[in-house]
Image 1 (tube, rainbow, N blue to C red):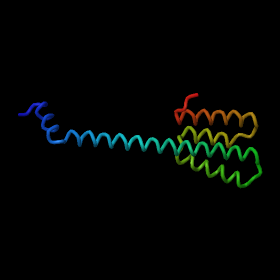
Image 2 (cartoon, rainbow, N blue to C red):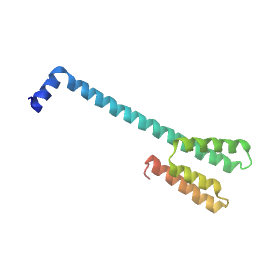
Image 3 (tube, rainbow, N blue to C red):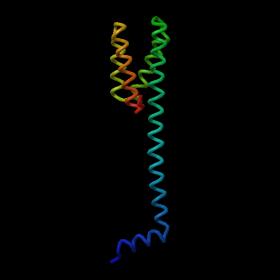
Length: 119
């Protein structure tokens, strides 16, 4: 029966330790890249939604601005969190200016929280 140190020595001598370290490093790198891509996609979607909101507020009767808003809403629904989607939907349903400003602030706060961006 071999002991743990014999097993460890055998792994080290045969190069399996290096392979194990490499496999762990690859797994962590993959995880980091996946998280970064997810963050970048959410951030791009949120910024696009805010820019389209700005366009809609400048030109409320512009059909193209409304189409851009709908496109960015769809992207947020794909890449964003449930909380951001709900906050954006609430903003879309507001009718008065005061309610709209409150909903915009809530949307931005929710986006910051989702992206883990502190003030």
